[in-house]
Amino acid sequence: MTHIFIYDGLHVIYSLMSTVSFNDVRKEYDSSIVAVDGFSMDIEDGEFVSIVGPSGSGKSTLLRMLAGLEDVSDGEISIKDRIVNDVPPQDRGIAMVFQNYALYPHMTVRKNMSYGLKLTSDLSDDQIDRRVEEAAEMMGIEELLDTRPGNLSGGQQQRVATGRAIVRDPEAFLMDEPLSNLDAKLKIHMRTELQRIQEELNTTTIYVTHDQEEAMTMSDRIVVLADGKLQQAGTPDEVYHRPANRFVADFIGSPSMNFFDVELRDGVLVGAEFSYALSETFVDTLDAANGDKLVLGVRPEHIALDGGGGDDSVRATVDVVEPVGSDNYVYLHIGENECILRTPSGVRPDAGSTVDVSFDESNLHLFDAETDESVYERRTEYLPTSD
Image 1 (tube, rainbow, N blue to C red):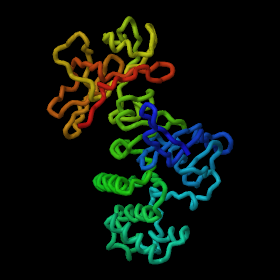
Image 2: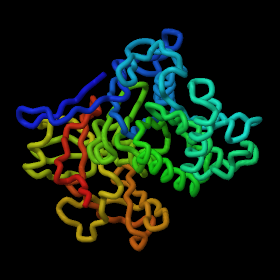
Image 3: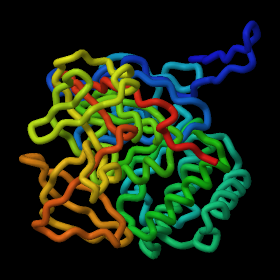
Image 4: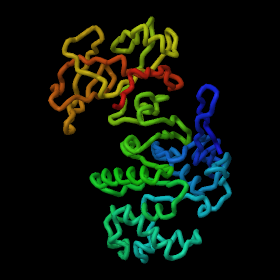
C-alpha cells in the first residue's frame, strides 16, 4: 500500500492511500512479444484515470492484468493493501465494463445485473434486489428491469452493463472502451452520465479509450502509452500543454501538432525555410546548448495568419482550406514542410495564395531531435487558469 504524506513544516496534515498500484509491471507473450514493459504508477482513491495510446500500445492488456484476465509476467499489481497477481478475478474487488457489454441474452436486465452478486457475495435475495433497483434508478433504467437485452438500444445496453458494475460496490471500476459502439450524440450524453455517476459514487475508475476527447473531458489524469511503455501521466492540461516528449505532443490534440526541424544558434531557431528569434528568458529555460539539433512543435491553434509580415513572420503557401463548423483548418506549406493551422470560420485565405504566419513564443514546444524528449519546461504563467 502506497502512502503520500503531505507536510505542514513539521506536521503530517493527511495522507492519500493508493487504491491501485502498478510496480514495474511487464507482460510478455511467448517470451518474445512485449505488450507492457516496466509500467509503474499509483492511482489514488476516487481518481478517474484514462489510458490512451495507439492500437497495440498495451492499454487493454494493462487493464486485463489488473482485472485478472491476463497473467503478469513480472512486477506487482496491488489493490488497496494486497498484491493481487495470483488472486482470482472474482476476488479482486473490481468490476469491469466491456466494449461489447457482455450481457446474457437469455436473462432479463434484473438477472443480468444481479448475476455477479449472487456468485460472489453472501447477500440475501432481498439485499441483491434492493441494490439492483437502486443502481437501475441511478442509471435511469428502472422500467427496463424485466426486459431482455435484445430488446434494448445500444445506449440502454451500455447503461445495464454499467449498472451491473455499480451493484457490486467495487474498489475500482475498469472500463474498456465502453462507449465505442455508440453514435456520436449518444456517446457525448453517456460520457456526461459516466462522469456524474463516478463523481456521485467516488469510486476509482480506470478507463481505456482510443478517443482522446473522452480522455481529455472525463479524466483527473491521463496515461499515455506507446509500445507498452509509459510516455506520460498527468492532468489533461499537463499532457496537452506540457507534453513530455514528441510522441505525446503528436498523439494528444486534434489536429495534431506541427513539427519543424531546427537548430539552436545563439538564441535563434534556424530551420530550412525560416529563423525564429527567442527571448533571453525563453532560452534560459531550455535544456539545450548552442548548436543542438531540435524539433520545434506548434499546435494548429497557436499559428496565426500575420498580415503585417513582421520580423518573425514565416512565408507559407496555402494548399487547402477545410471548413469544420466554427473553425477552418488551413493546410499549407512552409518550404517543404506541411503544416496546418486553425482559424475562425470567417478567416479563409484562397488556395494557392501566399500568406505570412507567425508563432507565439509562449506556445512553442521544443524536443531533442535524437531522444524526442522535451527540452523546454513550459512555465506555469503560460498554462490556462480556471476561474
